[in-house]
Image (tube, rainbow, N blue to C red; front, side, top):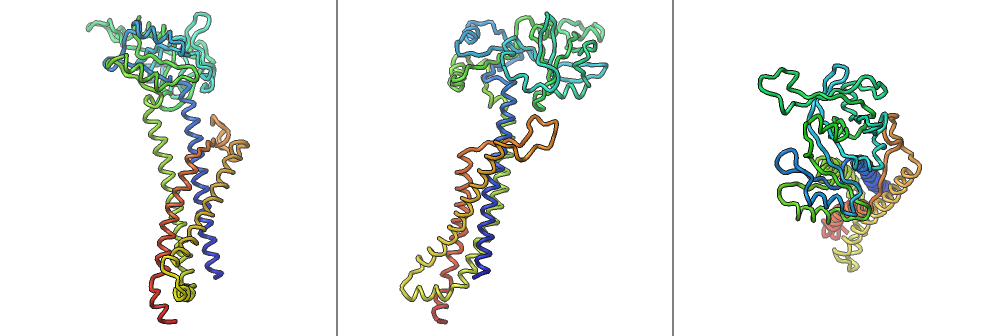
Length: 391
């Protein structure tokens, strides 16, 4: 019996650790997801309108003007975007220029993504560029050097077939004012005033997209549906989830991969429950036979051992969830576990607790516990007739 108690304790400890690990790891992934999406939301709009065919369109229509005047709109930005060649100190880089109208700067959180310098696009009638971290690292751009400017090359729309190589490109220079960092999807960009991009790309009217942010309390899904209904099939209307579909899929894939791995840990712990109950059945075979002689049926015997297995699992699960939630709360308040990198945007591992995760962990452990306890309970009545005959 001492050995059975030890094995039962180990089984409970295994379920406890597995449950706590599931809560902690999933909460950390929630935290990272919130941090990443929050950073991306500083750069991506709630609604993005793009042409379904072609690269640009005329935004000066009655419907687009009405969208801009909507009282629910917080910022309305015209964007002109194109692939370009960027040179700095004779080093080349293929990237993207993103010309934005003044509405882009209404976002008060743009400075939170700036690594060096400031998010300045215009000052004293002088155009400035804010570059992505990939551009900065590839070209070794110094935002403190105001004399060495970025040279941006774009194919000329008016160059003839007999023109020289240099006349086939439009070249404009601009001073870098800051460096931002988000991720591979955005860090190859050079953000400039839209007037600079229009001059470079020879697009005096058209834009590549319209980016719209709405005031707090606005139902963005409802707005998106209304725009889709009125705008027709010539344009695509995307929310943040659709703009960053690959990112969301990657985050969800990683989250569920970790969940499956830790679930296997709990399954392994459940095998200990089967082992401990099996030893208990062997130890209590005579008691089982006596109970059946007194009138206990097989369902009652199975129920006793099933209840024992469920008690081990439920106790381990609840204690594990409580400990996991306790650690997450302490991590949120005090940042006990640090990131360990001075270059990180955040000091400690981020944590975000979701009630749905608690329910999912409890349900997962209970399903595994029911299966493990059911297997053990079936063993309790196996060979029962032979035991009674031996007695």
